[in-house]
Every structure is written in C-alpha cells, then in structure tokens.
Length: 157
Image (tube, rainbow, N blue to C red):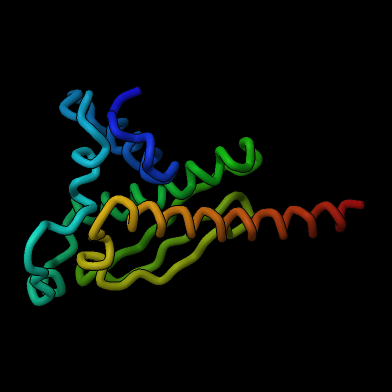
C-alpha cells in the first residue's frame, strides 16, 4: 500500500491520504508517507501567526483542502454503511473563509456544518488531531444514519 507508517493512524487519516494521492495525476506523492502527503493539513512548526492566518483570503488550494476533508468523511461513511449510502458533498465558501458544508445522500442529510475561518481551522497540530476530528464526524454521521434507517424501516412496515 502506498504511504508507509500507517499502522498507528486512524482510518480517516489513511482515507484522506488515499484521496490526496488519487488527485496526484503525476505520481509525485507515490511512496511518500502519509504525514508528507497530508502536510498541507498540518500547522507549520514554530510560532503561530493568527493575524496572518485570519487575514488570508481563501485560495483554491484551501478550498480544495477543506473539500477533500469532507470527501474523506463521505468516503468513510460509504464504506461503513456497506454502500447503502452514496454521499455527496456540497460546500459554499466565501473569500473570507465563511460558509456551509452539507453531506447528503438522496433526501437524507448526513452532516451539515457552518464553516468559519477555514484558513486557520483546517490546520492541525498533528495527524492525530486531524484524525480525531474526521472520525468524530464519521461517528456522528453514522449514528444519524442508523437512527434514520430504523425510522424508515418502521414506516415501511
């Protein structure tokens, strides 16, 4: 499998690294560890410059980074529901980093969240913190799906 050092990483981090590699059409990331593949999600070492992070305009790179994060959540949910859900990601983000993301499948909203300061909030101190946030959204989405599927099953009976 591409990307060594995955034995202690969360399934979410491995899924996100897989999606980032899938977008690497030139093979630059082949054989690189997940930590290097996901370096854009990690805060640079040293002093945090909140003023620069808050003043930064949302670039296409930042927008893609946030979208891929939620694509990884969707992909994990699809796998955990054995394909019962095909999840789409809809995201609206303004130049200042505020917006909304919705993960949905057909008529069912799996996850919805207001976004703000994405320039700063989608930089993590470690892959563990990145994985913790991703897995918590996956768990919550899965719990919503399980509750909803029971209700739908009762209505069909």
